[in-house]
Each structure stands twice: as C-alpha cells, then as structure tokens.
Image (cartoon, rainbow, N blue to C red; front, side, top):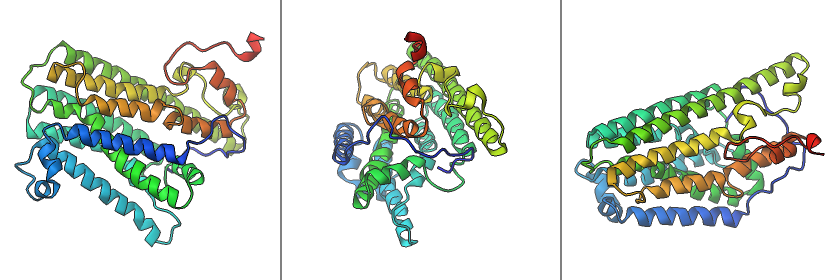
Amino acid sequence: MTSLTGTTAQTLRGTIDPPPFGAAIAGAVVQISTLGWVWSQTSAAECIAQPVTCLLDLAPADPWGRQVVLTVTGALVIWLVSLLALLRGHAHSDPSIVDRLWSIQPVVYCWHFYFSAPSPRLLLMSLLVSAWGARLTWNFAIKGGFSGGEDYRWVEIRKWFPGWRYELFNLIFICLFQQLEILAFTSPAASALSSDKPLGWVDFAAAYFFVLLLAGESLADRQMFAFQTEKYRRIRVGEPLGPEFEQGFLQSGLWGLSRHPNYFCEVSIWWAFYFFSVAATGSLFNWTMFGTVFLTCMFVVPQGSLDVTEALSSRKYEHYSEYQQRVNRFFPWWPAAPLSKRE
C-alpha cells in the first residue's frame, strides 16, 4: 500500500534470504488442496460437487457450501480484476484489491452465517469480528491503504519472482490461497450454524481473549504509527532524530517484547475465535482448525510473512540484526541485554 508516513530505502545486504519460488507455490497448492478436501467432508459437499447448480440457485443451498462456492468464484473474479493492470499497459498484474478486502470479508462471512441461522453464539461472533474488521480497516486507511498503490511487499516479491513467476504467484498464492484462507480462519462461525449448544464458559473465555488480543493489536499498531509519523516528520523538517528515532525502527513498548507484536495478536485472535467452534461442536479438534493452523504457518514458518517483513527491515536499518538477537521474533518475552552489556 502507499505509505502516508514515509519510506526508507533498502541499502543493506539483509539477514534473511527470500523463499524459493517452487516452495512458495507448492506450499500454497498443498494448503488449497487440503482445504478443498476437508470442506468436501462437511455440509458444503453438495455445493462443492455441483458448484454451477449451487450458484444458479443460492437461496436453498447450504449456507456454508454456498459461501465456499461464492468465495472460490470471487477469488477468480479478483484474479481477473488484477489482470486489468496488464491491459492498461503495466508490466505486471495488480492484486491490491486482495489487501483491501482482507479486513472486510470475514465480517461479511460471519453476518451471512448469522442471518442464515440466527443464534446467540453467531451474533456474538459476528459482533466481535465486526469490531476486528472496523479496527483493521481504519488502521489500513490511515496508513494509505485505500489511497492507491500497492503493498510494498508485492514490489519486493516481484524482484524475487520476476515475469511469469510473479503472475503464477499472484494467481495461486495471492488470489486463490489467500481468499480461501480468509474463509478458512472465519469458518468456526460456520460450525455454529447447526449447533444447538447454548452459550457457555468456553464462549465467554474465547470472547474475553479475543477482546484482550484485539486491544493488544490496536496498541501495537498505534505505537508503530506514532513512531513512524514522528520519525518522518523530523526527517522532513530537518530536526535531529535523537536516540529514540536515530536507528530508524521502533524498539520500545510492545515492540520491545516481540519484533512483531501486531502479528502475534492477529494470529492469536483467530485461535481465540477457533474456540467458539470448540463450544459449538463439543470437540477440541474439529475441521475448522485447519484455517487457524494455516494462518499461523503463513506468518510464522521460516520464509513466511514474518521473514518477508524482516528481510525488508534488515535491508533498511543497520542495527536491525542486533534487535533480532535481543528481542523475540514472535512470542512476547522479556528482551535480552544489549550486546554491549553482555561483552
């Protein structure tokens, strides 16, 4: 996305190498195939087996199956929209619409399920996801997400996967996998469609942790936005950066406990959300877990989203490698002493 605060050039070697193209595509294909197989064992089976029939007669279709088919269809439409950039003379497709929909689609899915089969549990889940979506949409907007341009990571990925490789990555990973993954981590709401279990302590515990983690993510994003805004303000007016800003990246607040506290809270929010399906099904391990597991993998596994972000940061900031040694990558924890104090 276009940043309204400012940008820093990548002038250093960096500490993390980009992922191999084959591994990125293979990983997405395996996860797409897994979700397809798992969902074919659920109430969506009929719609998955006869998608055209389902699309032509949506009203009587199973709500979960209906949403699966609509999401797959939507993913293909999004891919076609991304190709319009080629017709306008650009050298590559533009999947920016995927980023702009990320915070909106889970809200739509949850309310779709609620209005298909209203229940207190689905109402609670829909309200919580609406709060999550409103906050994330606002955070995306104030950073310039809806003002044009694309996420800076796609620019970097085109350098890693040039030409046809990026176009295949756009189709398989950005458009298909990410669209299915958004539906997958929202699927605990689908498990509540046919549940007759009343709200209980598991629901209230899930709601409590969801709200707590949402507050943590809000604080982390707010701290980062305030830091970047002030840093680039000082740069623009020629004001001394001072010890807090001279290294270029935030190391205090929640960012002193984890290098990615916003991502930790984001992933953990959806694990809290998963426990609504535990309450609805009575099973600790159920089919909706795959969405949360794959979301965790997308962020945490080596050369996933965290490493992509760190690869870019380590090329911008000279002292980022010391920060990597001192502060936990994902899980919040007390930082180690600075290297100068350990010697």
